[in-house]
Length: 239
Image 1 (cartoon, rainbow, N blue to C red):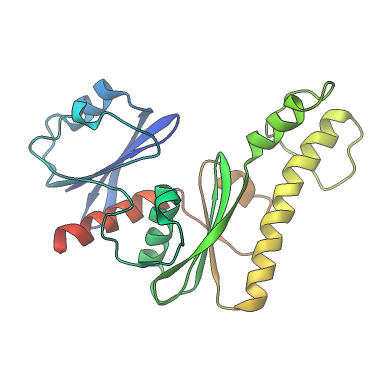
Image 2 (image 1 turned 30 degrees about the vertical axis):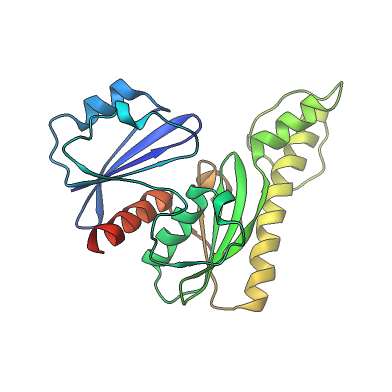
């Protein structure tokens, strides 16, 4: 069994893979060492990979009996990374496109990760990661309107429509959320125009929220990063 530890800014995801299938997922607060060690204890893992978006004291994890790989920018990966500054590339972005390529081999793919930021990343059918774009996520946009103005309230995501806002609150909600929807659909339409066979996958914390609204045909997979990390782990174990 493989153990995947994905440490984010606010929470940590642990996933168990057996024969390349997810058999369990456990979510706790970021760097909740006691919770992580309690989950690991008593289980028979052969290999483990740790990915973190921040500096983490992984020596506190009870992994002494497990073959453990700490994912970084020098870790061998099963794709070609064409990013010109790989040391600045988010490891979650890289893992997501590797997961996408594993699920849809020999396909051109755009991966949209709708979390704190919204990222648009591209990998071609020959497993070349071509790069991507970064945009503010939904909560960043709400916070920016509140922080950089004197009179606009702090709001959060909620149901909206495409119409004209009749109140300041509805104007903000429609503007923020529809702005993201139009942005996502614009990217999909633009790159579909260049490649009719392009597959689009959306992942991240807000994936299901936007999937209900977006009219284009997209696949939703909230475990894409975990799948990619498992693929990276297997690639290193095999080699």
